[in-house]
Length: 317
Image (cartoon, rainbow, N blue to C red; front, side, top):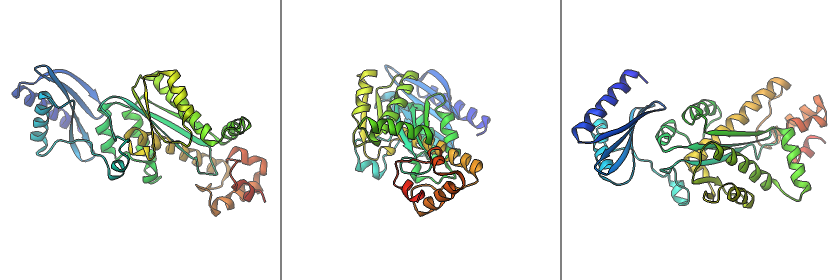
């Protein structure tokens, strides 16, 4: 983005606000642009001016009031078209409890590695502020399962810039994961309990950074642990647990950060052991596992895999 282009766009915004009798009560820098808070009479609205991959973007925020309507007129004049507003995908419409984005800061969490024999479990959470919504959307932030692994590192880096200081990544590498799984199992608990513990831990860290009214998490078979821990933390926080929660922008961002950490672990162990550890739990995984056991012994699996998988039996035969 050219600083001159942004400066020109901001100057034009100020000019149009003045011509429409809008008072600019506050300006502040946001990633890749600037946010204007404007007032018309007793009503206020926000206008985000920034540059995305396809050039100038303007996004209005605020209720259906005089100030917002004036801001939308400015947007239409500057862009030569209709204002940009978040739209729910078809999949989101199938799950009406999942809102793509909210008008107040909220938390979304997701995990990566749950179904992979090699590697541990990564759980990530992101606080998304309203002004970050258009920036994340312009990046193409989506469920990490819909994005190629090659694109994940770049997207993760941009998410960390936009949501700077407002994300947490909990990486349970295989040795720690196996230790915790065995501990939970000895208490009569299962994998869902471990997942709930990981998500709850991330949520607690994020709430320490910034208070929110809403947390969105993908639905587990048993989410009681998250609900109970959140009630103790702040009973006023609403917890939304629904299938396909990655449709929500914050959950999607979290899924990318979790996937990025998981992929980086795979790169590191490939360098360390000279073996390509395939994802999932396929026949290729079994083949790689047997090669690893041959070189390092069965006891070494604790450091690179999830021992409770049935794949362990196949690998150690």
